[in-house]
Image (cartoon, rainbow, N blue to C red; front, side, top):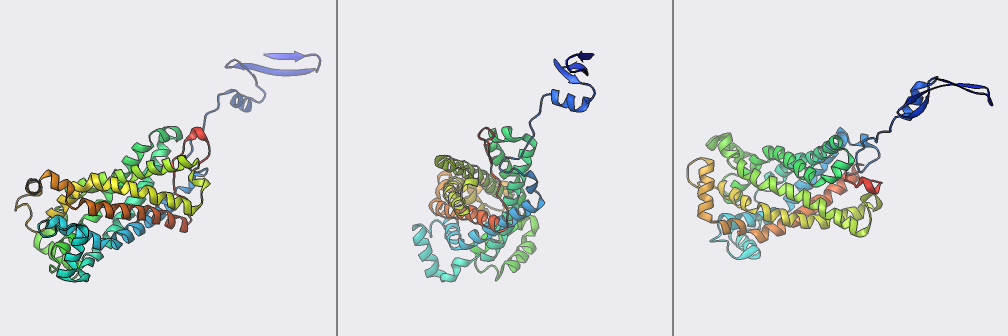
Length: 356
């Protein structure tokens, strides 16, 4: 309708929209101002969601490969002793320190580096897909869910992202892990990683030689990684809350310190949860273990022979030390490498508190 205002001699064209007067001479702007405004979806932890792109995921993958390759490689001596304790508990029954002494006395100090090659390379590949995959799946989940829903479901996102990333990573890790265990259990099997892999493929085939332990490695690694990332995320969040700070409020050094502390807790929790499967994996890759049947029957035989208690406790102390140290180192190195590459690590944030 047309309204005439004598005092100003104005003629205004108006209509009603949702109970509000709208100027129909300029309907697009007027209608837009009359409609309820929708809240845009943003990626938490950054005002610029565009930075979480392919380059970011590649940086996360590289940082993951470096942190896993370095930490697993550095802890090869601990892993050698731990594996010996699992494979031959009758002989190696004097604890972690005693195990070190036994290996050195019987085979020399060089034996503590058995399997270093497949360990460092295998876990570089695994770390590439694991850490890179977790970053990718986390960000994609937040993009799909939006800020508020992602914050409420952040623990589930951690668990789902970790499980998916670890499954992919284990496809590449399994052959190298099988080779490592074969060399540790039988140091005279082959002179190098490549020759050991060639020999295993020739004698047992690709599936039998390299993927006999794929079920156990999934059973071990998927719960381990789910626990590692979920617990580390939760503990880090608790540390930040106790300080009344967010990651963006602190220096890079302080954020690395938080990662180290939360990583220790996450590593011990992950070691305990995944230890039974770790013991089975070590035993099933030992030639002749569990009989000559299929993988499932062999695993059942090994579990029966070992017993539930020993599956859960053989070598657990050594593994808690190893995984607690390893996990803390991984998160610390990951954050440091990401910063060196110019990437700002993704963090969840509570939308109700504002900021990132």
